[in-house]
Length: 169
Ligand SMILES: [Zn+2]
Image 1 (cartoon, protein in one colour):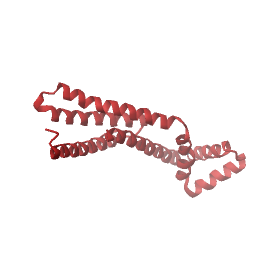
Image 2 (cartoon, rainbow, N blue to C red; image 1 turned 120 degrees about the vertical axis):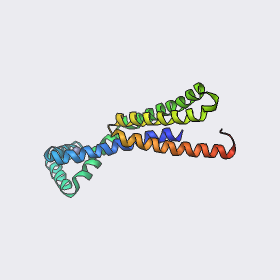
Image 3 (cartoon, rainbow, N blue to C red; image 1 turned 90 degrees about the vertical axis):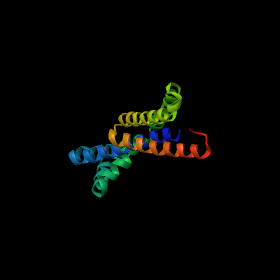
Image 4 (tube, rainbow, N blue to C red; image 1 turned 60 degrees about the horizontal axis):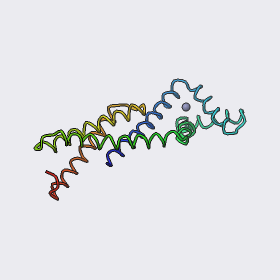
């Protein structure tokens, strides 16, 4: 079920990419709010107001986006919610990802088992990729496409190896 792990890892990466894009847009549209945001973060870390504003202005002049990614998004990464959410997502994708092809194998006519399992696995992966992207606030189409493509590659390898050793039909 490496594909299940891949789905949860890539949806996390999509979430991060969406966070970075949101920061980039915010910096473009309301640079002053973003500067204040950064200054408040520095102040909350123990700087005086003057030092915090000065530091925020200086790092923003150097590379504002990098400063926000490091000091603002980096802050949320350190909070407990994200690893927990990733673990739950991973557990759910694992059991769902395994249950769908199993069900398909049960309902499929004997001669069609491989086809049913492959098609249902792809649909399940695409759905889970979509759910993961939506939960993470990331764009839907690239997530679903990537999961479907990697799923097909994984299935192709599985089928090839199975044929090689004579275990799959
Ligand atoms: Zn920001």
